[in-house]
Length: 159
Length: 435
Image (cartoon, rainbow over all chains, first blue to last red; front, side, top):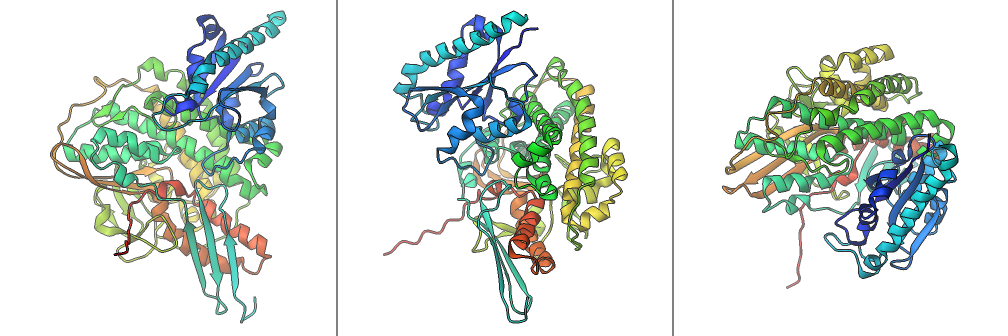
């Protein structure tokens, strides 16, 4: 049986650039939407990463601290280390890197899982995405399509 | 400790609690202990934010007070408004609200048991460390939490800060087919919750014997959740809107959260331990059997706060079992919400949040707009009991190495499952201006 790609889109639709991931998955073409399992999860938690064995996961989110509109892609397992280089603090839940770290400790993420981010600069309540993010949203969508197709290609021989 | 020595214990940043606070505890040379739970998280002004808003807007706003217990805020508010407007909700809507609340109890209790509290009893500093050695245990906790969130998502419209609760009912009631996928998950979760009860009952927990005053709702026939009377183990008995008849809020200089006191100023304990001690006879049969199998009596749980993890696990099982019953017998309401007409007056109600009694009171004008609000979360009310318990518990640990004693004191606070962010919503600003 072919494994599915799960796309976990993080963010809030009404918080400026934080909507980027949600807008990107909503713009995916129908074929990609049928092939992938798309979940809009708001804030990433470790339980979101308890997917069925064999699934490949792509976490997509807006990232603060890189140039606005720039695209960042890396193995999901590297997110905690990357995040550690930024001043991340929260007393209200695990950060995305913390959630991934907990999932890694549980062995529920693998080497094929990816993180895809777009740099953001404006996160105000009720704001629209900044021009930098709006201008590069197409690039984020294209990268997501490639990642979803990559999963299918990898799984073809096993189908 | 010598007769002339003063000891000071400080936890500058409490960890594995919701929100930002610290502990300052001093043992004087004469042995007297003074504990201050310093809540320095900034005030959040929700009581002002709802002024001028309609009841349905209030339901969306108060849900934002907490990402873990938003349903509780919606439930206390919606019942307050419905009580004032004399809205009779459909029995199916009432069951849906209990299902929604069960979802919140499941995710909140699973979070605290597995990720925040259990590491204390297994010698780990964090859930990450616990997960490395007890993978199956942590995964079981996360799956229970995931199920709770899923229930809230289906009934409430989204898992965090749900949006479907409305005065008179819901904006949309789920169809039977919407709830059907929950059935097999709940059957599995009953087993996981039963395993949780037996697992936590086997943990080695510190001894701590004291006689707390307990306050919780008590319902005529159900385990307390959305309604019932405000009761205590020493005779308090109030309608759910009459909290202010016996209790009041006070401000202490070291906390951004108001504290609460009974009229006699005696601190009181809210939450799973209080509910279970006052309503053990209302537990779901599966939860009652699981509690009996642990060998712990409600009396034993009541006297030692460190056993609160057992009470919380029993309630977790109760919530899963009740959710399974509701889903199994679900018949959608004839219409999602009853019509209602606003009227001026005082809307007040209390429900049982995962952490205990949550009281709301609103002054409403003729048009239905809120003119004043009072929101009294459980952590606010538990603050005085936490400080009192710290003062009682400290003598047993002050002779331990300083770091060990400090850790034990912090563990006592965590046993309360405080949600500091919930507690700091008040508005009591004094602005001094120079002439």
